[in-house]
Image 1 (tube, rainbow, N blue to C red):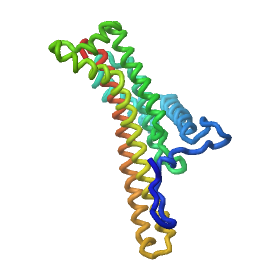
Image 2 (cartoon, helix red, strand yellow; image 1 turned 60 degrees about the horizontal axis):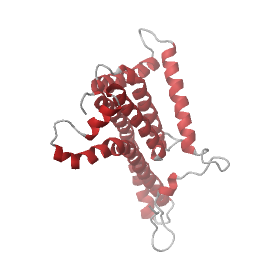
Image 3 (cartoon, one colour; image 1 turned 135 degrees about the vertical axis):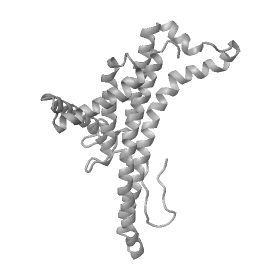
Image 4 (cartoon, one colour; image 1 turned 180 degrees about the vertical axis):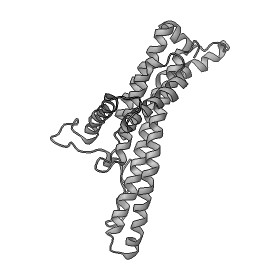
Length: 261
């Protein structure tokens, strides 16, 4: 995707993919960029918050303890127990880590001075999808055995043999390609598009504010207002995408645990 340029003369240059390729903070290392630092910062922030919220646990919880328990309870009850069922507890740590990691890095996109969602770099969602991919296949193989598990994927029970010619390639592609891709690309696309929209409104408002024409200066506050409004909408999308990737992972695990899938 190339940055759209106005045909003649200097003008507003809309944000493009180049605005997501941030240079190294120091040196020339690809591992010294802002997204990398934000990911490490999110790990430190999440760890510090939950250690602090559980250090002095009491029957009557403090505000921090209540917040930590509420987040944990949401993942444990609304995703783990409700989707996976009776054997859910051993998967709660993974689901809880996935949810808190994704939502923290998503919300960074609207936090002042940070203002960049790490998940808008597709490599991060790819890695998370690989972890989910490994977990739900490992669960299925451990329960059913490798041969039975693969047979259940390739040859769905109760289907006429002639249908396998069409169905088997589709099922194999779904389990080994489509699922990890949908997990990662859904998260990436939403974070990328949302941040791009915010950039359009904010940089557009700044451009109009400094435009010599009075009419453009009058319009600039509306662009900033749209940008602020979009920030609230983006916050909703950021939370929703963290929920969706965790929910889908739980659904895949539940499917792998089922006798037939």
